[in-house]
Each structure stands twice: as C-alpha cells, then as structure tokens.
Amino acid sequence: MKRITLNILVITALGLMMSCGPATENKTPAADTTTSAASSMMKENTYDATKIDAAAPVKEVTLHIEGNTMTDMHYDQTEVRVPAKSTVKLTLINGSKDSAMQHNFVLIDDGTAEKVAAEGLKAGATANYTPKMGSVYTGTKVTMPGETTSITFPAPDKGNYQFICTYPGHWQKMQGKFIVE
Ligand SMILES: [Cu+2]
Image 1 (cartoon, rainbow, N blue to C red):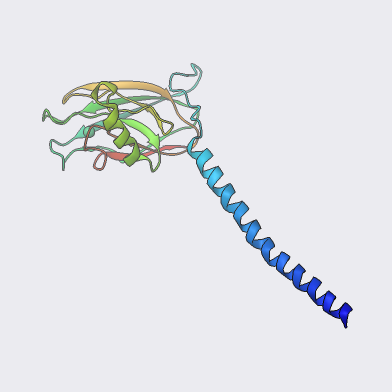
Image 2 (cartoon, helix red, strand yellow):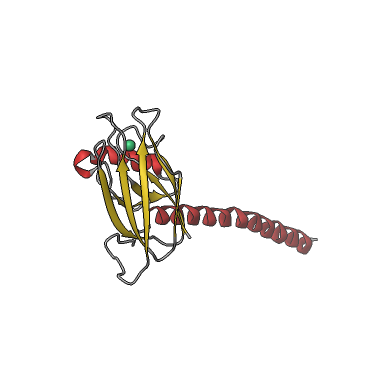
C-alpha cells in the first residue's frame, strides 16, 4: 500500500510539473513577439535617395495638383506605378492659385501617412514638413501656387508605398498609392 501511495504522489507531482510546463512555455512566445515587434519598428531604412544608378532606365512621372480649397485640393492621380530598379524623375506641378495652397510630394511606407504627417508638422516649414524617419524615402520641397519642381530618385524595392502632401492639414485629402512593380 505504501508503494502505491508513493506512486500516486509521484504521478501527481509529475502532473503538477507538466501543468506548470505549458504555462511557462506560453510566456516565451509572448516575450519573443514583443521583441520582434520592437526590433522591426527600429528597422533601419537602408534606402538612399541620392544613390542613382546612371545605367538604370528613367521613368518620368508628372503629378498635377489641382483645387483651391482644403476640400478641393488633390493630386490628378491617385496611383503611380514605376518599374523596379528604375530612376524616377518626378515633376510636381502646383496648379493651385490660392496662396494657402502650398503643396509637396513625400514618398512613404504604405500606412504611415498619419504618423509621417504628424512628425512633418514638428519638423516644420524649414524642413518642408518632411521628417527624417525610416518610413520616409524622399520628397520635394513645398511648392507655391503656380510653381513646378522636380526630383530624381531611385525606385525603392518592389512593393506598395504611398505619397502624401505633408503641408499642415493636407495629408488626408492629398494622398495616393505609389507602386514599384
Ligand atoms: Cu498640399
């Protein structure tokens, strides 16, 4: 009888240990998720807008901005497609007439518009409302009504990006998809 009792005790002890096991294991993946989320947020953007390959084909893109009020203002295209490994020559034409209609073009990671615009506001007019952060690839200066500007930059890696105007209060109305294919 004593031996059986001991066996039951051992089995119970084992059972307890095993039931503790999964609880401990559960903590590990949770901790890992937190770590990888944090490290992907800090992921370095190795893109260099000045690194232009002279041999790459040039893709010309012209974007017109139209409208004279906060509700009217818009880019004439909501989707721009460029080939991967090309050099993009982007011309931005500010066709607005009202003096409050100052606009730019900023190329950013898809889904980061709100954050970039908020940081752009902090960066201020001297920075063309364009923050230096990992999700920002390149951008034009802020153009005045009637002004045309252009920038040349290498297409980022294949994927979906976004372009926005970071002039205060404009990003919600002024945005489009930028697809590298
Ligand atoms: Cu704008």
